[in-house]
Length: 182
Ligand code: 3PG
Image (cartoon, rainbow, N blue to C red; front, side):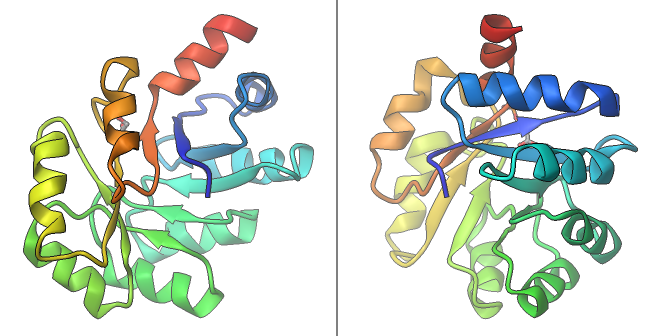
């Protein structure tokens, strides 16, 4: 997985190629296309077809049905804002990485029970940021985090510098890419 995971919202399917191209030009080889819009699955399929070398996954996946649609479209990883046992099951069956949102010790323990050791930490700015990640890493040294939500250029480097940070997610990368390459 790349160190930077752009959180992408595609409102119209026709925007997909423009956004993916801008990310690629920006040096980002990954995209988490979110199930917040009706065309999410189609956008994932299109992105996979046109950008086969990019790591295209699905975000905001909140149930098994969306997860199955994302995998059918070609998603290579699945991200949720919280933890869904049903989604975890579908991902396991399909051997696809699942990054559930976990911000409490209980949620992290649920993830561990499901065999998951990389979790999204969302919204990172609200749930204590780097300070919280450091505190949670004491009892859970086997866990790696993907802080997302309120991450931007001002705090990106300090998150990336922490060894327990697997990657950082955010929409700011999409905005940057589009501002620069559109
Ligand atoms: C997400 O779903 O991960 C967030 O909407 C991303 O948060 P951001 O817009 O603050 O980066």
